[in-house]
Image (tube, rainbow, N blue to C red; front, side, top):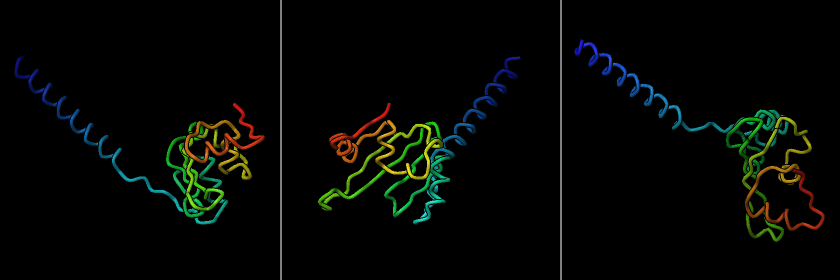
Length: 132
């Protein structure tokens, strides 16, 4: 009986190590980001489904997530065109955005959880409204 227990324990440990290895491998694969170029239809489909992609050379990039909680990065030139400003956001319910709302200000305005210099700029704009 003692020998059977050792064999079972050994098999369980081997299975745990194999499953751990498979999990680690799957988590460390590079995510393929679809480059939509300037194709707004391509990007709109990916925005609503929260599929990793980018448009306009990466001025908007979807990193990961689900339509309920989508991680995105927005970038824009500063008003004086001397700096590149960014805003990292967790966009809630990306599937509810219409095509005209797939931009940094609309994401800010619809109450997404954001941070960054671009976000700070929007916060200081006169008349800026942020819905919760």
